[in-house]
Image 1 (cartoon, rainbow, N blue to C red):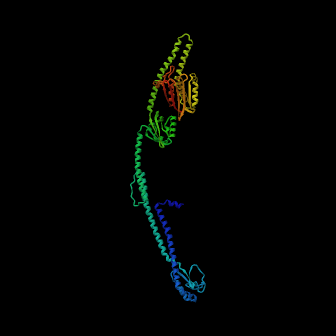
Image 2: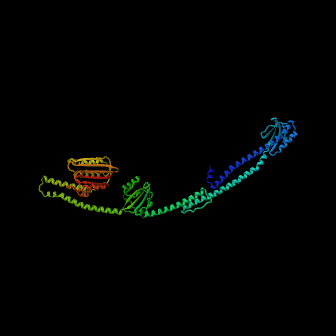
Image 3: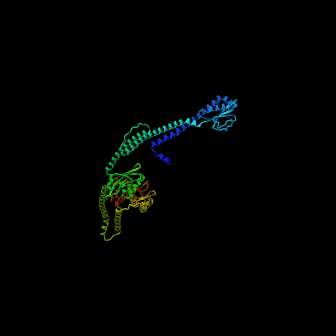
Length: 556
């Protein structure tokens, strides 16, 4: 395992050289040994063939020598055969392997029987297809080795030459490969340093050269793209920083990862806000919750919010949150001065309205107090006088109560309650009036849960229903409907009374404006005030002689 790890750490050149050497050694040496072995076998076969030819040519004489047992001539024949190169010993034996002659008589005595040895080869001497004897001979192994030795040396020499050539080629190829790899590495390093690399030509036209050319081309294109992107980044950064609005880019979870420098006007830096949720900039919990819900639903949000300001100033902004692919773009336009101006105008309007209301209230109270003043000069009251006083007191109480409803502060706390139960409670209050005028009341009220200001809803419904009761004649008709449409509630009150002239429709929500003789003019003004508190919408349509329809739409 250690050798494998070590080999993996070698350079490409060393790996190529070792690979060439391995291939040459393990391919050429076995082939060389095979050839040498083959040549040795061929040499042995040549020697055997020479003996066989000799026996075939001298077969008659050799047969006579065996039959006549002419030992001296037999010895001469055996001696001459032993002189053939590659033969170390020759014997002539009869069919029973009794020795007739031997080239080494001291080792194999004439007349004795030869114990067959597989190291000795034999050639039969035939007589009428039957062997009468044999020529036994033993090959000279040293002669064969000495004969083949030059071939072995040549093979080893050629192998070493190829090993040297392979090593040289491996080193040469590795150097050429390393040069191109170094060129590729230098190109990347220079590119990282911001320098566009120059193209270099190579003699080789292989895949590695194509790779180097491809990388050079891509790096040049990438450098141009980065240059364009850098220009665009600087341009847009300058553009965003020149804007008077705060521009924030949020990720899919609502966390800030870009801000222009306008945020510094609020005492924050980009580093302060990086990675923090956008609602950290908002003061009001309700606004923070709304923003989080919009991010969760990936929906657009537009609204006025109060911002945190480290400079100690009270700041307001128009916030626009818009989803963009997997992120959000958020802009904050400072409207603090506009908000302050609006508050000032509202205060002026309130003061003006209070002055106007005070004048109207004083006028109404004066008219209501006039009968009391006149009755105070009468010494004694009859039943009719008491009735006049009672009517005046009731009118004063009504004026003061309606004024109190119109001007009192309202708690904007939301509660959960049933729509049907609320309608039933209001109807119980006006049940005597409805029965007295024999009014036909048609109800279409869905039973569902509301989550809003219950007091405001009760006052709105109470005033609209009271207006409808006052508007209809005996046995008149009133339709009351309350339904849920998605996240909004639709309340409709319709009557078939005398209706309101078109020229007066624009004034019906003004304080102290009334078309009724004993009206205070604060009922519909109160309705409008509470509709604004609920951030809802109210509309009215009316035709003289046919009736009036009020429609309220609020989120609940």
